[in-house]
Amino acid sequence: MNTEQEKCLDTDMPLGLTRIVQLRFEFEELTRGFSMPEGSDINNIDWFLQNGHRSNSLRNGFQEAIEIAKISKESSKGCTKTVRTGKQVRVF
Image (cartoon, rainbow, N blue to C red):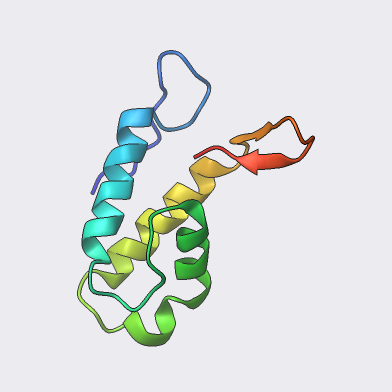
């Protein structure tokens, strides 16, 4: 897996949208069958980084999944937007 930082042509994001989607797909494929909550969102990545080692650390692909989760988490920082309620929500 090549985790070099890429610049997207139309944003200041460290990773382009295509690369982010690719990493998310790889994460989902690697963690298929792991013990973790259902769904595919940034909250699951947070959970995996904090708790995933408990029952998954000996599974094939665990270390690669951790690396992808860290990259996804890092790329989501700053991806928030204020909605009509005035609250900030993650947009990822």
